Image (tube, rainbow, N blue to C red; front, side, top):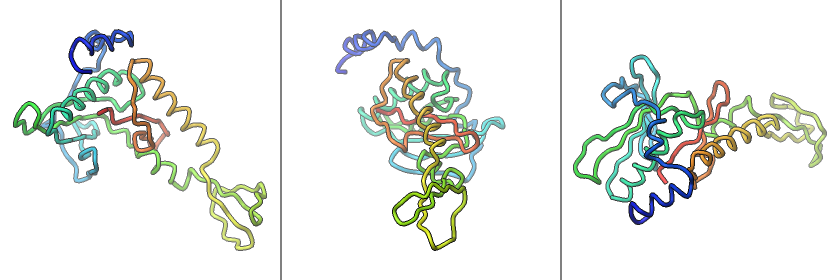
Length: 212
């Protein structure tokens, strides 16, 4: 997209107008200084993730430094997508966003505040013990025996795999996330395990990271 006219044409081709969609976005509830931060935090290439509460509501705060025009445009794009998808079950609900330490139009810290869904990324979720089955083998042959617990008998070979039920459940929910994005006129373009988070309580799946 090189200019505003080209951008408008692309949105029209998708049968989606972001200016009209603003009427259907979630209402922003919290600002950065409403957050009571906890000591828990994470960091990575995406920036930093902080945890806390806003008026007794558990929240997650994503912060990233913006230093170039390209990063600024990515951040604006992420804001637009997240706001529009927050009325669905596809993403963690966005509760607030804004800028900190503004030095110029393209140099500042962007923050997003969203609900805390008590989630972990897809890899961490499937690595939990309760999501694995034990396959009992005789040499390289599958004996057909299954167990939810590790087998200590050294007479056979054991293999640990994610249960078929869990594979199907997660696959369906991940596909549903992508389909919902497409229905709203968005393409993610970076589908990978790290960009899906799964609730530890009920295996709800959300898709994240729209700075594309």
